[in-house]
Image (cartoon, rainbow, N blue to C red):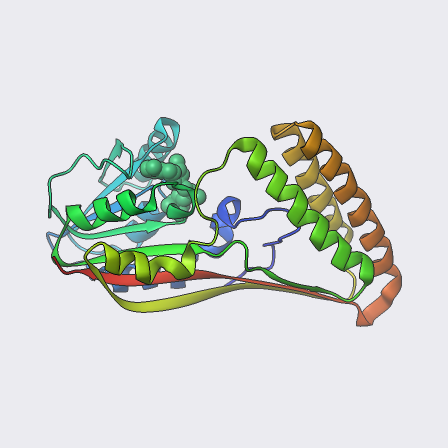
Amino acid sequence: MDFSTIDALTSPTLKHLRARWWDDNFTEFLVETLRPRPGNRILDVGCGEGTAEVRIGRLHVSQIRLVGVDLVFDRVKTAKQQAAGHNQRVGFAVADASRLPFQAGVFDSTFCVAVLQHIADLDTAIRECARVTVEGGRVLAVEPDNKARYSYAATAAGTSAFEASVRFFDAVAAARGDAGDPKVGPKLPALFSQHGIEPLDVRLFPVSRVHLGPPPDEVWDRRLDAIAQAMANASTDTVRALGRTYQQALSAYAAEARSAGSSFIEIQNTMLFATVGQKTE
Ligand SMILES: C[S@@+](CC[C@H](N)C(=O)[O-])C[C@H]1O[C@@H](n2cnc3c(N)ncnc32)[C@H](O)[C@@H]1O
């Protein structure tokens, strides 16, 4: 997997970087787990702009019926256009994961990727995924633990920059009123079993990057741009103040990294937790 451009210093989550971590291996894992058979109906809850539908479609799994739902009309519209542009026949609808507009047991498998982390009422959303899935069908959820991101920087200013980035992005999330549990990934087996889904397997997808030697200028530029963009999108006094502190910390880190020479190292790692379950009741 090419995770080289995923950077905790530009975003607290992986959500804006989907195209970079969602590769063929990940799609194959999804398909293998969902066990599509001819005639199967498969539901993608929180389909976003249709990444799953387009990627799964490219594998030419025969005669399955994919349905994607999302809370946001514009995402559904884009997903429809994407699928049509790839000649894929997918059903799309605007719907809330907490009130899925389907009868019980109508899907052979149900999945969601990077959605539950944004939902405040997790119990209802998971219960809905279980309800619409046929008994014995697969339920799959892939979510991160955005609070468990490992980072190491070989200079003191680097450690301060990572700390400043966490404070800044937390303030941005609070200003936006983000709901949901950013740590939901490893909690999925317990949540599944509380709602009639027997956990069968958990697969971890590590997402890592390493800079040995000082990162090139474009990395620092991208980091500074991300701060400016986040400050523009969530402009409160707290966000602005923490943004300026983070900008200063990042500039100090860049200077230290450049002068540290070839032994400089920066390491980042996080994980996606893919929990596979089977509807039991
Ligand atoms: C990070 S995106 C992931 C999109 C897609 N699953 C993917 O991986 O490309 C999260 C999506 O969940 C959707 N979402 C958030 N809350 C939702 C809810 N209650 N019901 C349905 N969709 C929801 C958002 O609109 C957004 O499109």
